Image 1 (spheres, rainbow, N blue to C red):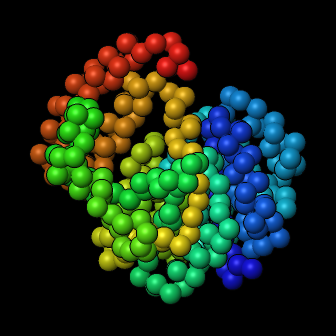
Image 2: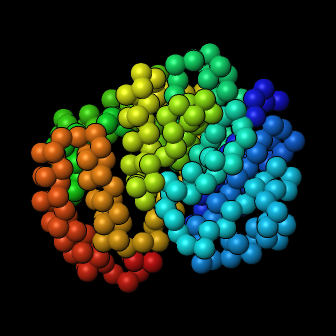
Length: 298
């Protein structure tokens, strides 16, 4: 039995099959427990809205059996959609959860136990595994200009083990140990309500990407800590929504978020360099799309 109420916020876009599995994993573990589920569908073009209408009626009234539904008429972005859930959430803890995830037994109990023992924790992530049970890296350090230059220019594919990239990707991180991290992946992003009241919502100027990095940076700047909790586990299929977009589309969104992040937390020089490299990065993404086979684009 959960000792605190948790609001689980799931933002979905054209991933109905994964969303079904995710919700089933929650109900299987916590159907009669202290859980509130808030599903925000960002104008999916598949049958997500029909399925939600059939399984959680009446949507217009907002709540049935601990489930709240928001059906957006347009894709408002990941940060905005999550904020829609956060502002109506009633839990003591708020969990931002990707729809392509499966909860493992004890994950929420272990997270609450950790938070209750660590008052300095502003946000925490858990151990994330791939469908084959191997560890999925979910911790990184804060972005530095040099690492992001290499990523923009796709050089990280050719020099993956160069020191500053290894540092950024936290390749030395021990996923068997619960410990402080700089940033944790947004697939499972748990925040105490009191921290949201202090720090504020996600920055909606990030359409997607870097909104959780920005939140972790704001946590750090407020003298709170970000933790990785090794005793809590989920499975994550990984990036299923954005696998539906081509490289150039994704690169435009990524670059805009990256530049905005450095406008908030970096130097003017950093922003100047990133803006110069932006068209080069987009050209490389265009070339990638141009030479993909039709099969690889689907």
